[in-house]
Amino acid sequence: MKRRTFLQTGLALMLCDPRRSLAGLDTDKLETASKLLTRAAEMGEVESSSVYVQQGSDVFARTFGKAKNLDDMFLLASISKTISIAAVMTLYDEELFRLEDPIRKYIPEFQGEGRDKITLRQLMTHVSGLPDQLPENAKLRSQHAPLSEFVKAAIETPLLFEPGTRYSYSSMAILLATEVARRLSGETIHKLSQDRIFKPLGITRSAMGLGKFKLGDVIRNQVERAAPESGAGDPSTKSWDWNSEYWRKLGAPWGAAHGSAENVARFLAEFLDAQGKILKPETERLIVSNQNPENLRPRGLGFDLGQIGGTPGLSPNTFGHTGSTGTICWADPATKAITVILTTLPYRAVTPHPRDRIAALAAEAVQ
Image (tube, rainbow, N blue to C red):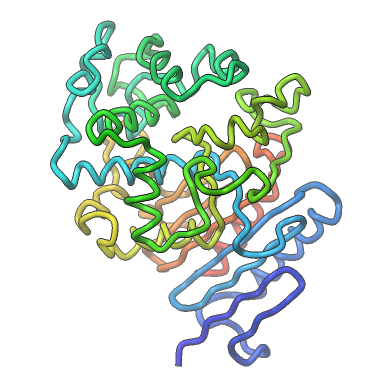
């Protein structure tokens, strides 16, 4: 009989003999990780966090601090990119675009100064030359601008380098990829994600933006010492920082999806086994394989590859992503293991970040 164990904050819900370890999981390593996050919550360093580690049918899951159960939804930050691009790729399966297509084919005004050369593949793998954040990012957010204003600015913003010659992480490239999908389908990325990703996977505690949820339904983030583009804890940015109703509702496809740790794990599992529930199996395999030239950093479509977040011990075929809110997730085909760590402590707030220590222990636990 398969054994499945859920361990939550201060409470063990044991569906098997509690004296036995999970098969395949080193629970000593995971207990050490739990103690670290418990201590971080007690000290006020990490207000809320959630850990979900799965290998086969065995699951180790706990929440800490102000997060009280596994349904609690966190601001996923750049993990959002993986969901957004998966939604975009459903249109690829419908043969509405090719990865080699130039962006100007779908956004005619996107041309000049090298823009004509940029392909959809280059947008999704961060080699387009577009910047990460717009120079006018803070201005747009302080004005509570809609996504359409960010799109307009991204179309006009200067390129940093000739497309395809360098790797440079770009949130604006992901935004324009979702704009192509919007123009092709007539649907927002919020609806595409809900209808084509969350619904078929049975994911009920996630949304691009807030969706059907309210601001009080999601975990608040710590904002002191956060990334500049998030407001960095400046009191004058409260109307548009990570915790503002404006930002949570905006659902920026590069960083404002919400989700529970279990939901993120379920999303990753779809690609780990190429189940074909949201995309053709061959497309799911394509998304998590390297799409960049050998001389550039390996990237899948929307996914990072290899040692996610610098986590040691992961195989080269591991796929996942990190987030500036203090989040990280991955799935490793070599161990058939999935790890999701969601915290509310901004990644740039402390060095080393607790997330990194927990990630290393989780990687060791599934070897």
